[in-house]
Length: 111
Image (cartoon, rainbow, N blue to C red; front, side, top):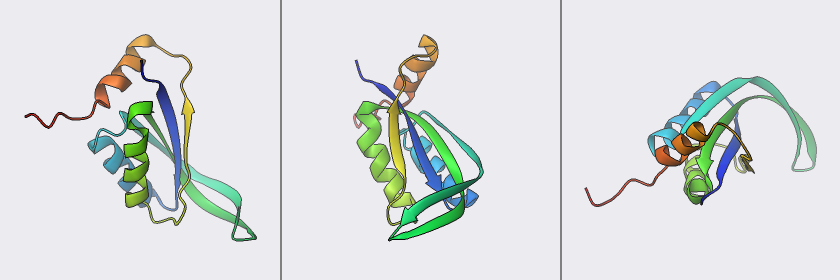
């Protein structure tokens, strides 16, 4: 049985976060997504310490759809190296976990 995942992505603006969410959910790469922010991110980039305002996107998907989700986020994102981090969901309401799996089933091409 495929593992369910929570995927975190940061974006430089609310508009970009919304674009990532629209791409991910509409394409069924993620069952759902939430946008939080603004948040303050501190990180090293090209040898310099940076501090930026960003928006956090949290999406739920499956291990089977992670590669497609990663590709879709990279295409929709403006960052050279966007944060795309997946962590396993180790528990939760069974009906919700099943819903994630149902909503991220790759659309059939036999329509």
